[in-house]
Image (cartoon, rainbow, N blue to C red; front, side):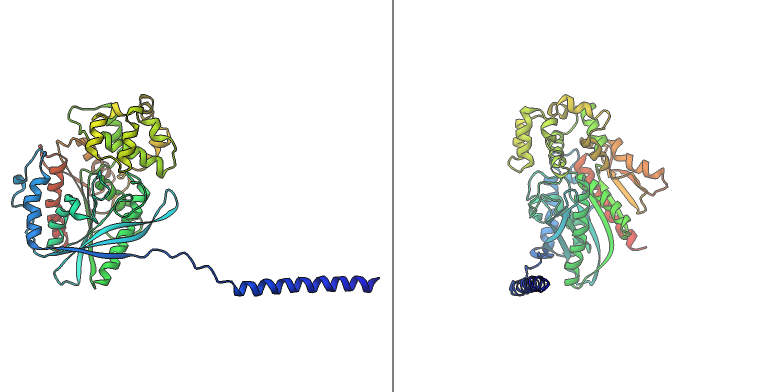
Length: 419
């Protein structure tokens, strides 16, 4: 009886060993699945802006930029730097992530390199303003005049200009990340890293690092700067033009205290922000709960690049209060709902800034009232910072303040390099 049990156990043991050997053999024959390939930084030559083109930007195209402004191009005549070098333009694609969703993605941007034969150059990271077309972004400079002006003012005088397309623009397959803080910060950080690789390939060392941004890009510059300081990445100086540093407070002003001179673009800015916040923070139904039903489809189409801004304007309203539902607007009084809390967390000035920072603004800006333009500097000065709010003049609007900032920020950056 014992011998029989022993024989059964022995046979079972042999069967187990045989099965294990079979599994090992099959496993050794099976091809190992390759690890997911991470996208690399790539770049493509676009074209070279020669001196004739650069001068054209600072003259004829500047006049185009100032159409509809409270000031004229002639008000800035002779104040721009004279272009000294042609500029080679490169479209860069690079891997980045969307922290709010925990996903990887690919973004694009611009690297503009002065053709001056130098092996070390200062770099300015430019953060662009709000755009209403997916391809109107820095990596497509011929479609975005503000980018060409930065190239003509800085790159033609020896600065490498880098500029990220905010997520949702350029090659990005994600929705537009309007005022989405973590995603915007990460895109700018990864663009800086990608630009370093391009410069290394060109055998160019990065010298002083400067930051500049206009409007939404002013907000991006501020939150990017805060992140760089947290990372202990040295920034020689930073400047902004018409920065939206506190979107929560600004949107509250647009809702509760509209003024006759408010820009007609405000409803488009607000609706895009709502859709972006809904997607990136997974607040399902946010836009529908905030936007009046008769304007919801047009707002959705604008955000999804299916409708241009002029068509949106013709089919909606120029007043933020008319765009939004009354019950949604009332939630801004206390700011305790998820949307308002997220927008409040997107503020870009409530920290002790260690970097020299100048914030230019216009006193007749129809988008950013003077109070909101000077608030960040006043707040930071209470903490002992050296932040300065600088007026572009009593008649300077949103566009004029941008031009003023290009002229004066460059002079300041030049001075800092020569110290």
